[in-house]
Length: 420
Image 1 (cartoon, rainbow, N blue to C red):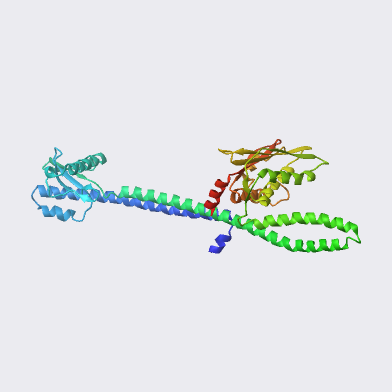
Image 2: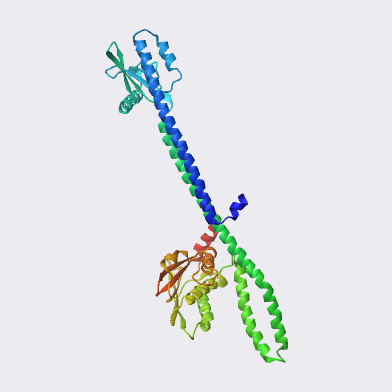
């Protein structure tokens, strides 16, 4: 059953979590109703004990029964009582608490009590009056005193129990949901790592074969000159393929970072794309506006991959004849030690309802696509480089802008040590 739960989709687990929390809340509500009913019964019981105590006191005052009779009647009761004369002077009390669990002595007369004990008795008297828990003691038609009583205090305990249970359920719900989100993120991370490494592994075999074919073509080039030129072109493409494999192989492990100027990486990627931009049915240009910035710890291959993904997405979003992609860099931060890079296009834009989903794995606006480009870009920027990437703006028919923030080396070291 545990394995089945682990293999279930996240949405199914979330529904299971919701059902479990509903059942727990229902059980707590049922328990609360039972406690409410118990509180009502305890209140009725305290009323009956008060009647019995009033009867016992009446018998004692009429001298028809001794004081031991009152003790026998009330022995074992936890209900607090206070008997006063008609002028309010306390005469006898029982189960009245002074502070915490300390009881007010019953053997001492009222005038011998400590001031704080007298204050506790007066507080109980006022509370009983407010709750209507007062019974007159009448002898021969003449009132001779008043009997004040409390109850078993279960209602206050009930409120504490219900409040504590509600807090416990909220904490349990929060921790469970947090665990589910962590599990979801871990599964996504493992999926990316597994897919990337498997891709690198699968590409290794055809690359080795291509290397052999290229060498064979070069051996034959003296007899067939065209084979030499083809071998050189294939070797360049093979170098590109090796670069892709190297990128995939670094996913899942902490890549090596080296201090370097991010503008150099931007120029290299722009130079690679420039001759490959559309020039026939539509024209797309890449404009660079690069300011002097500080050197930042970068993995050149992986960060170049991020820029490539952003440029490819911009190209796919171009539906006009005069497309333009603008890449800017500028120093930012308190001392100008951070670097902000913006990649903007004048494409068709992203609908508002989808703008929050662009970095989710599997989301894509293309008819064909895995929807992993921006998800991997976020992983590379935020987890490997300690930076931040976000969708800065997107307006339909006007374009989209993505922003990247790369932090100074000290901030990166703190981020990576905290992640470790």
